Length: 243
Image (cartoon, rainbow, N blue to C red):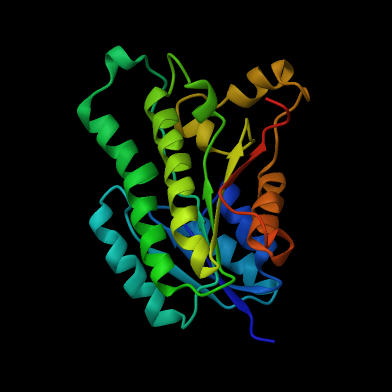
Protein backbone atom coordinates (compact mmCIF):
# COMPACT_ATOMS: atom_id res chain seq x y z
CA UNK A 1 0.00 0.00 0.00
CA UNK A 2 1.27 3.46 -0.89
CA UNK A 3 2.43 5.39 2.16
CA UNK A 4 0.76 8.71 2.78
CA UNK A 5 2.81 11.91 2.86
CA UNK A 6 2.39 14.43 5.66
CA UNK A 7 3.76 17.98 5.76
CA UNK A 8 4.29 19.45 9.22
CA UNK A 9 5.35 23.05 9.78
CA UNK A 10 7.36 23.84 12.88
CA UNK A 11 8.58 20.27 13.24
CA UNK A 12 11.81 20.87 15.14
CA UNK A 13 10.27 20.68 18.63
CA UNK A 14 7.10 20.45 20.68
CA UNK A 15 3.82 19.42 19.10
CA UNK A 16 5.24 19.37 15.57
CA UNK A 17 8.06 17.02 16.50
CA UNK A 18 5.78 14.75 18.52
CA UNK A 19 3.31 14.52 15.65
CA UNK A 20 6.08 13.69 13.19
CA UNK A 21 7.51 10.85 15.26
CA UNK A 22 4.07 9.43 16.02
CA UNK A 23 3.06 9.57 12.34
CA UNK A 24 6.26 8.01 11.05
CA UNK A 25 5.15 4.40 11.16
CA UNK A 26 2.66 4.93 8.33
CA UNK A 27 3.55 8.30 6.75
CA UNK A 28 6.44 9.73 4.84
CA UNK A 29 7.22 13.19 6.15
CA UNK A 30 8.11 16.66 4.96
CA UNK A 31 9.36 18.51 8.03
CA UNK A 32 9.53 22.28 7.96
CA UNK A 33 11.88 24.21 10.22
CA UNK A 34 13.57 27.60 10.35
CA UNK A 35 16.44 28.14 12.78
CA UNK A 36 16.52 24.94 14.81
CA UNK A 37 18.36 22.59 12.45
CA UNK A 38 19.55 20.35 15.28
CA UNK A 39 16.00 19.94 16.53
CA UNK A 40 14.53 18.99 13.17
CA UNK A 41 17.39 16.58 12.49
CA UNK A 42 16.64 14.85 15.80
CA UNK A 43 12.98 14.62 14.80
CA UNK A 44 13.94 13.22 11.41
CA UNK A 45 16.27 10.65 12.97
CA UNK A 46 13.50 9.36 15.22
CA UNK A 47 11.02 9.30 12.33
CA UNK A 48 13.37 7.42 10.03
CA UNK A 49 13.92 4.84 12.75
CA UNK A 50 10.18 4.15 12.54
CA UNK A 51 10.27 3.67 8.78
CA UNK A 52 9.50 7.10 7.33
CA UNK A 53 11.14 8.69 4.33
CA UNK A 54 11.86 12.23 5.50
CA UNK A 55 12.70 15.51 3.79
CA UNK A 56 13.69 18.71 5.61
CA UNK A 57 12.30 21.99 4.32
CA UNK A 58 13.77 25.26 5.58
CA UNK A 59 11.68 28.43 5.41
CA UNK A 60 11.41 31.59 7.50
CA UNK A 61 7.65 32.00 7.74
CA UNK A 62 8.00 35.49 9.21
CA UNK A 63 8.32 36.35 5.51
CA UNK A 64 5.20 34.91 3.84
CA UNK A 65 6.88 35.25 0.44
CA UNK A 66 8.98 32.19 1.37
CA UNK A 67 5.93 29.91 1.25
CA UNK A 68 6.38 29.52 -2.50
CA UNK A 69 9.95 28.31 -1.99
CA UNK A 70 8.81 25.97 0.80
CA UNK A 71 6.55 24.18 -1.67
CA UNK A 72 9.22 24.16 -4.37
CA UNK A 73 11.34 22.21 -1.88
CA UNK A 74 8.38 19.95 -1.12
CA UNK A 75 7.71 19.22 -4.81
CA UNK A 76 11.36 18.31 -5.38
CA UNK A 77 11.15 15.66 -2.65
CA UNK A 78 7.58 14.31 -2.82
CA UNK A 79 5.02 13.50 -5.50
CA UNK A 80 1.90 13.48 -3.30
CA UNK A 81 0.44 15.30 -0.30
CA UNK A 82 -2.14 13.64 1.90
CA UNK A 83 -2.02 15.75 5.03
CA UNK A 84 -0.90 19.09 6.41
CA UNK A 85 -0.34 20.05 10.04
CA UNK A 86 -0.13 23.84 10.17
CA UNK A 87 1.78 23.96 13.45
CA UNK A 88 4.48 26.64 13.16
CA UNK A 89 3.82 29.51 15.53
CA UNK A 90 5.54 32.15 17.64
CA UNK A 91 4.81 34.43 20.52
CA UNK A 92 6.72 37.29 22.10
CA UNK A 93 7.37 38.27 25.69
CA UNK A 94 4.32 38.84 27.88
CA UNK A 95 3.16 42.45 27.59
CA UNK A 96 -0.05 44.47 27.73
CA UNK A 97 -1.34 45.77 24.42
CA UNK A 98 -0.27 49.32 25.36
CA UNK A 99 3.36 48.23 24.99
CA UNK A 100 3.06 46.43 21.64
CA UNK A 101 5.15 47.60 18.71
CA UNK A 102 4.27 47.36 15.05
CA UNK A 103 7.25 45.07 14.47
CA UNK A 104 6.13 42.64 17.18
CA UNK A 105 2.56 42.42 15.89
CA UNK A 106 3.65 42.13 12.24
CA UNK A 107 5.95 39.19 13.01
CA UNK A 108 3.33 37.30 15.00
CA UNK A 109 0.64 37.86 12.38
CA UNK A 110 3.00 36.79 9.59
CA UNK A 111 4.05 33.51 11.24
CA UNK A 112 0.79 32.58 12.96
CA UNK A 113 -1.81 33.66 10.43
CA UNK A 114 -0.62 34.94 7.05
CA UNK A 115 1.84 32.14 6.35
CA UNK A 116 -0.47 29.33 7.56
CA UNK A 117 -3.18 30.64 5.24
CA UNK A 118 -0.77 30.60 2.31
CA UNK A 119 0.64 27.19 3.30
CA UNK A 120 -2.87 25.74 3.43
CA UNK A 121 -3.69 27.23 0.04
CA UNK A 122 -0.59 25.76 -1.56
CA UNK A 123 -1.26 22.41 0.13
CA UNK A 124 -4.85 22.32 -1.09
CA UNK A 125 -3.65 22.71 -4.69
CA UNK A 126 -1.74 19.45 -4.29
CA UNK A 127 -4.34 17.50 -2.34
CA UNK A 128 -6.90 14.95 -3.44
CA UNK A 129 -10.11 13.50 -2.08
CA UNK A 130 -9.47 12.02 1.35
CA UNK A 131 -6.70 14.45 2.27
CA UNK A 132 -6.89 16.56 5.43
CA UNK A 133 -5.56 19.75 6.98
CA UNK A 134 -5.22 20.32 10.72
CA UNK A 135 -4.48 23.85 11.93
CA UNK A 136 -2.98 24.22 15.40
CA UNK A 137 -4.81 26.92 17.34
CA UNK A 138 -4.74 27.58 21.11
CA UNK A 139 -7.15 28.03 23.99
CA UNK A 140 -5.78 31.57 23.97
CA UNK A 141 -8.30 32.13 21.16
CA UNK A 142 -11.07 31.63 23.74
CA UNK A 143 -9.58 33.66 26.59
CA UNK A 144 -7.69 36.45 24.82
CA UNK A 145 -4.54 36.24 27.00
CA UNK A 146 -4.96 39.73 28.54
CA UNK A 147 -1.77 41.44 29.72
CA UNK A 148 0.29 38.69 28.14
CA UNK A 149 -0.21 37.60 24.53
CA UNK A 150 -3.28 39.29 23.09
CA UNK A 151 -1.61 39.45 19.66
CA UNK A 152 -0.91 35.70 19.75
CA UNK A 153 -4.48 34.99 20.88
CA UNK A 154 -5.86 37.16 18.08
CA UNK A 155 -3.91 35.26 15.43
CA UNK A 156 -5.16 31.94 16.78
CA UNK A 157 -8.72 33.22 16.70
CA UNK A 158 -8.16 34.27 13.11
CA UNK A 159 -6.75 30.84 12.29
CA UNK A 160 -9.93 29.23 13.58
CA UNK A 161 -12.10 31.47 11.40
CA UNK A 162 -9.84 30.65 8.46
CA UNK A 163 -10.23 26.94 9.22
CA UNK A 164 -14.00 27.27 9.10
CA UNK A 165 -14.00 29.06 5.75
CA UNK A 166 -11.44 26.74 4.19
CA UNK A 167 -13.33 23.67 5.41
CA UNK A 168 -16.44 24.88 3.60
CA UNK A 169 -14.46 25.62 0.42
CA UNK A 170 -12.74 22.24 0.31
CA UNK A 171 -15.58 19.97 1.51
CA UNK A 172 -16.96 19.47 -2.03
CA UNK A 173 -13.54 18.11 -3.03
CA UNK A 174 -13.55 15.62 -0.15
CA UNK A 175 -10.74 17.44 1.69
CA UNK A 176 -11.32 17.95 5.41
CA UNK A 177 -10.13 20.93 7.47
CA UNK A 178 -10.14 21.02 11.25
CA UNK A 179 -8.33 22.78 14.08
CA UNK A 180 -6.91 21.62 17.38
CA UNK A 181 -6.96 23.97 20.35
CA UNK A 182 -4.24 22.95 22.85
CA UNK A 183 -4.29 24.28 26.40
CA UNK A 184 -1.26 24.56 28.66
CA UNK A 185 1.15 22.09 27.09
CA UNK A 186 4.63 21.35 28.39
CA UNK A 187 6.74 22.58 25.47
CA UNK A 188 9.51 25.13 25.07
CA UNK A 189 7.18 27.83 23.69
CA UNK A 190 6.71 29.16 27.23
CA UNK A 191 10.44 29.75 27.65
CA UNK A 192 10.54 31.46 24.26
CA UNK A 193 7.87 33.82 25.58
CA UNK A 194 10.06 34.69 28.56
CA UNK A 195 8.21 32.49 31.10
CA UNK A 196 10.10 29.21 31.49
CA UNK A 197 8.22 28.47 34.73
CA UNK A 198 4.75 29.11 33.29
CA UNK A 199 3.72 25.46 33.09
CA UNK A 200 4.67 24.70 36.69
CA UNK A 201 3.02 27.91 37.87
CA UNK A 202 -0.30 27.37 36.11
CA UNK A 203 -0.67 23.58 36.31
CA UNK A 204 -2.22 23.52 39.83
CA UNK A 205 -4.99 25.90 38.70
CA UNK A 206 -6.06 23.76 35.73
CA UNK A 207 -9.11 21.46 36.00
CA UNK A 208 -6.96 18.35 35.66
CA UNK A 209 -4.23 19.84 37.90
CA UNK A 210 -1.55 19.24 35.31
CA UNK A 211 -0.29 20.44 31.97
CA UNK A 212 -0.75 18.40 28.83
CA UNK A 213 2.01 16.81 26.80
CA UNK A 214 2.96 17.23 23.17
CA UNK A 215 2.17 13.55 22.63
CA UNK A 216 -1.39 14.05 23.88
CA UNK A 217 -1.93 16.79 21.32
CA UNK A 218 -0.24 14.74 18.60
CA UNK A 219 -2.65 11.85 19.15
CA UNK A 220 -5.59 14.20 18.60
CA UNK A 221 -4.00 15.64 15.47
CA UNK A 222 -3.36 12.22 13.98
CA UNK A 223 -6.91 11.09 14.70
CA UNK A 224 -8.24 14.11 12.81
CA UNK A 225 -5.93 13.33 9.89
CA UNK A 226 -6.97 9.69 9.81
CA UNK A 227 -9.83 7.88 8.11
CA UNK A 228 -11.34 7.39 11.57
CA UNK A 229 -12.34 11.07 11.34
CA UNK A 230 -13.63 10.80 7.78
CA UNK A 231 -16.87 12.65 8.56
CA UNK A 232 -15.26 15.38 10.68
CA UNK A 233 -14.62 18.76 9.11
CA UNK A 234 -15.17 22.42 10.07
CA UNK A 235 -14.58 21.48 13.72
CA UNK A 236 -12.31 22.64 16.54
CA UNK A 237 -11.13 20.04 19.04
CA UNK A 238 -10.05 21.25 22.49
CA UNK A 239 -7.10 19.39 23.97
CA UNK A 240 -6.94 21.48 27.09
CA UNK A 241 -7.66 19.32 30.12
CA UNK A 242 -11.02 20.99 30.62
CA UNK A 243 -9.72 24.55 30.49
